[in-house]
Image (cartoon, rainbow, N blue to C red; front, top):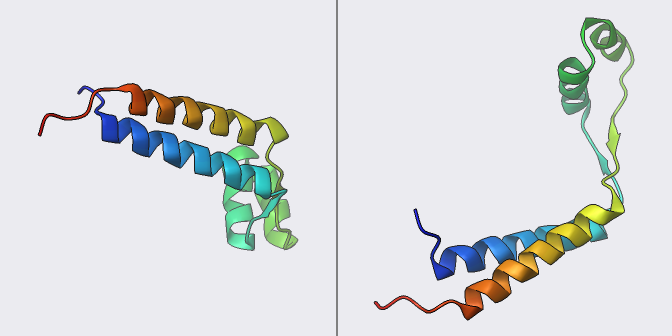
Length: 89
């Protein structure tokens, strides 16, 4: 499938605004249920037992460069879509 102008524009804008969101948010605190799921998927059985006994909420801190990277890729895709020829109809 060939990417059309509007597809690239949408992808570029979504990536750009996701990058802005990552730049504005310093950390994300998961609920207890989500924290248990992440611990079960990443830790194994020993950590799962620990997480079930102690109600701890996991805090995720995205790296600072992630927002800038998403904004950069989104801006490039948006400008690229503007440079493409429009649909004939």
